[in-house]
Image (cartoon, rainbow, N blue to C red):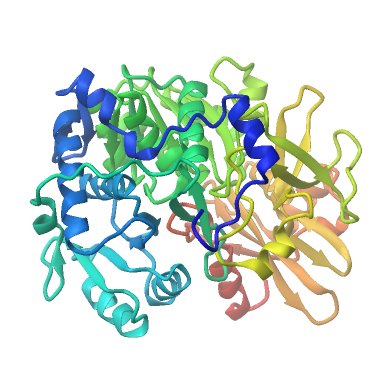
Length: 536
């Protein structure tokens, strides 16, 4: 295995093979079957382009030849920073076939993130767009190349300037390299969160192929369907849950939107016959409010919603407004995925995060002392399994803090389990406000705030306080022209039975929340805004 990646213990690896979770399938095999069996069926579609399976397969082989001619070799890490596009899909599959490891990153990342990723990955190459959303990524590449001498190659989708054009490499003679080792690292994802630099998550061919196969089965995606990537494909949710790669594996069509904005995404649903997509909760109200603006029948559409807190009432209202089916998911690039299924009772489907993907997923819910909590109690989720990493790449010191001695990953998520075995996420450990020693789970308070008739959405953040250590500040998007006051909200929460220490200390009324590149509320920015605002 790649030096710096942490393998599964031999006994567990044998068990995962014996029980059929690891089959030896590699991501290099993507497209091969559909290209043979249904060559003209659309593999990838965008607003402006559509490519069939046989043609996409040919392009991937040709680009693999071009990358090899440019010096890319098996085991090399290349940072890939492309928007949702046919080029992104082609680059990833070509690299899988060569054994080159794509490190997938978001187009919103800049020198601090890209420079750090190139250095920590010891990247040999960087793949970028020329200009995206007004930003010239070639300027970024120059700064990265100067800061990280190991980056030998820069490949540009578009006008290359002094770098290498992706189109030039794509015109090379196809190659048929030796198949990669299924136990080897296939790609690296980035750890989530809104603060600090991301860490690298190594995913192997065996474990990611399992994830693609089983998520497609769980969400009933097959060759008759189409998956819409409205979120960035560099994010695990849109890449492999089942995402674009899961669609390509089963012969479905992968439809690529430029953003989750309703006017970008919803027309594609009708045009391409989309049957499945993935959204963050922040976009649900926008889609619901825009549904009547488009003459699109969404009755066949299933929307997987996850990645942040979502209250059941909002989910029900959005499902009714859109006329589609909503399911919920919980997961992470590090591995563990949990889904509700389309045939679950509505209370389970819309009110929980469902059941783990794999029978071999091992879960523990523990308290601050590290011991398992009582059934139904809230605690931190720990997990290990056949598609959950055993360690971040080249991060030994960090790994000692986030993994137990027996290999359980400390997710940092606060959850509880229902008697039926469904998961309910209550928030993040780091999203808990320590108010004078009393712990305030932000997610819990936010859910109650959203139930107020004058509140459309809410986010609770910690602000420093000299006496208490931290106090809470509620950012509220009003539901109408008459916004609530802090006193009204505190009275409302008190009436719903919340403890006094959980009531917000400050209130800020806003028109919208800032979001990270993958659609999560950017609480770091909200916190910064509150720190410079007068108390209120």
